[in-house]
Image (cartoon, rainbow, N blue to C red; front, side, top):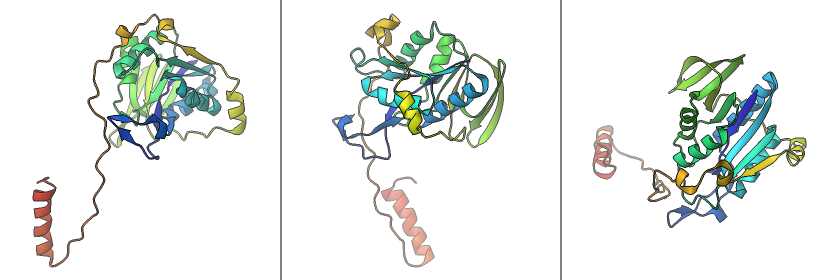
Length: 257
């Protein structure tokens, strides 16, 4: 089975993020594998171990993304591909990424493509569905269970706290939700093996693309941090007076009434 994982390098929201002039300062930011993509890597490894084949992780980004690809290889993936757009794409968007991935997959025989449900930096959830549509293959988003039997896939899809049961056929693209599995930590032997596993680097020219082919369809006007939370207030006095004060605060200060 030919299994591919769409992986994105994202900043670590557990660390302090500094925004300056509408951009995140890279020098101060810590970067990790997008957490939802870790579920995709884990599921890809599980499906390979059950059905055979190999797992290839692929990302679109710059040379710094190699670290996250090596982490996925240390988890157990077989191969990695970095499509380096550092010199060709200044400000891409989801359309850009999907177009690049489409060009990569055009001559591939993928049985299963997995990605994260969303990326924690932009949370659009668009790249997977866009890619599946362009390739003309089935896709299911926000999955929490996956069982494959020959060319048939049985899937549990998260629908706002409930579960939808879906049966479809391969080739298939899925996006992975929390609860699908528990991603493994790279082991020391896995980290050592990852250093010798193949990591291919491509550029737009290798995919017969130029900058105009992947020009972004959207423009980011500004990037900013949410306002700091103010300290809470404790209302005192008689209950009726507290209710009146609360309504006044919600109406005049918070302006939610």
